[in-house]
Image 1 (cartoon, rainbow, N blue to C red):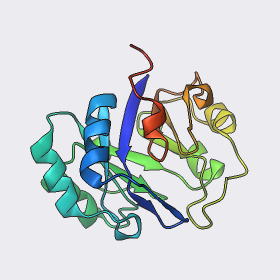
Image 2 (image 1 turned 45 degrees about the horizontal axis):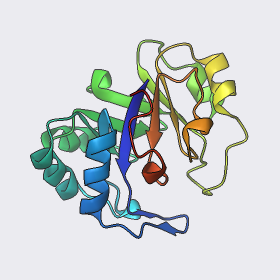
Image 3 (image 1 turned 45 degrees about the vertical axis):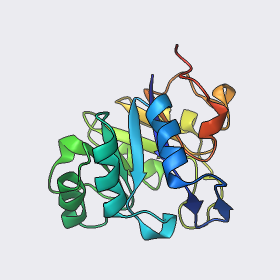
Length: 179
């Protein structure tokens, strides 16, 4: 199971880290197989932070944001990302480098099975929990699927996940759970 370690300093849903971006990056670089860097200003992210991260690690980087336009994907890749999170749509470019995060189970069910999909338990419009769980998502999507949000400790990890994306509670993991 891959760990995608998110450098998350802020959430528009009322959370802010006591640690600096640099401290969180160091932790993510230690723990993660892939490092997630926010590009969306709502999460205090930017493409400049993505460029900074690229200079600090050789690990794969996931540009985390909504990326509502294909131009955003292109910019993220040019800024140093290996992968780009895209929320609520299938882009026309670089699908092989995108992690697709559908908003609903219905959207998840119609995704091609050969893409990387992310099931976020958080509703990005309200900040609350979605009605459907990772188990529900796994029942409708049998391809590569990442579990995201509300992972506070290793006990929250679903064994059916191919990867987990951990941000707010990254410090709780301390070391890579698989060794």
